[in-house]
Image 1 (cartoon, rainbow, N blue to C red):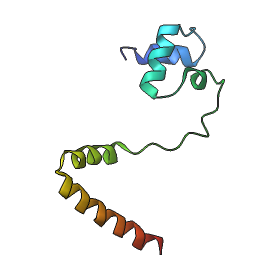
Image 2: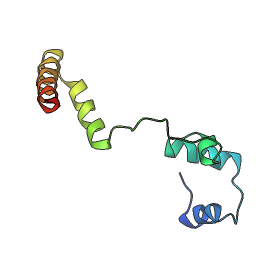
Image 3: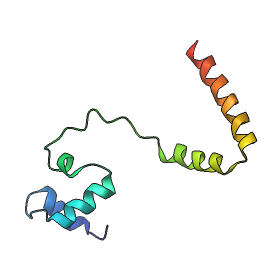
Length: 85
């Protein structure tokens, strides 16, 4: 984001006021709304995001030919069904 740790610390401790540009950058970087950053909205209803490791694997799967994707999904579905028992 281009913000020093000292500056972030000053914002957290209330030594400095957040300017709108910084607030917007923080919300984008942290993937939350500005209301959530300001404590105006609770983030409890938000579902958990996939981990970075899972996202990287999904990107690689999307690069596979469709036939290999289908075969992989069948394997994953069978594994998940076995875990439900």
